[in-house]
Length: 267
Length: 267
Image (cartoon, rainbow over all chains, first blue to last red; front, top):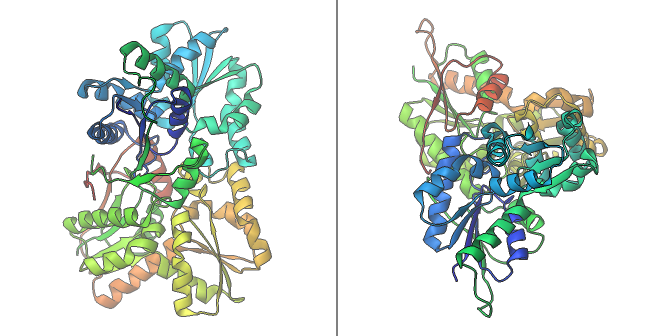
């Protein structure tokens, strides 16, 4: 009966929360966005691990049955530390995306885009090679995509120009799958799809992660029983500004009634 | 003989440090960049004040004779709190820029660009109107400029497109002065100048702030005496990544020998 706990560096992870709510409409959910320290994707591993641990402690203190790290950077960098230190199931966004990419590629040539931290960690390459070492991976960091999505410019001429400049090198690589390795990127799906063309399958980690959580809840008997009360949804942010609320609703695809400001301390 | 203390949300304030080192080459300097929590410009006032106070405590613990808030957002939002709470002279970047704009305008029509927080605070408008209430101010937030400068894209086609889109409304306003109200923006000076044309004077807060500090040290007798030892320069960051060092050197316009990582706690 406990809620699913989800944390992200900010509001990008709401794309994951949205998919969880869509796929598991009866489950309660607590979301923590660390908007006071966002972004993680340009910061060092040590700092990202420290922040991820303080986010996890907050969610565990609220009582959650499973922890979802809805941030590619934190999944890439902090997942081993979290899995080792805390005693609840932890799901990141890297493994589900990697698994889907492996099953979707026919040519064995897969592109991955993400923040500088995620790409620098080679987390997708490692996960994919655990399943199939023969797959060739072509990574690219796209640091402007996060601010473009945050500013509501995901469908603008500037976004198209940035996408062409970041994605042009893929044309020669002949990939047939591109992993959107950042929770912000689903907002740029249209622009990215235009540049990549129809022959390339875009893998959306948010969708794949929601599927993995559904499977986990079913296999572990943690699913909320039918006929239980209406699910609750709580949203906590470490900093609240007008922009965050506006952007949050764009990411979640619906209005948010209750946003609560929390101080989770130094971490 | 004590050093000048300078803090910024990240590395943008190095443009201010650079001007201080150029104008006051004999002064020692301690720089603190809060790279673990950067950026401030999209966060709430309460959070920015809290972070500014912890930065100030760190610099005071190091022993500084004057505190420079080399961040427009922190200057706009936290300066009154810092001035009230700490017992050393505090210089922000807003007043020097405002003063220069007033003396430079002939038409009495001044544009201001900055982060959403700085623009939202109306800090430049208030400062300018203290000097001359008759001046008309036209503000515009340019949120993409910071990531563009951080990514080294300050002279790119994407930067030109962003500049045209943000600055186009000024064409009808007939301003003759534009304040670059963010320490990152001097890197985009060329692109901004191209869009604004020759008839508009760009006010660079970094230069004006260095002049104000020089005047303050001279008038208060705090200047380092001639013939003293070679000045020391120390750079502290709350998070260190490869990107930060590379970008820091671009902002400072020279190599940085000693960067030290510090943990300044929760704030």
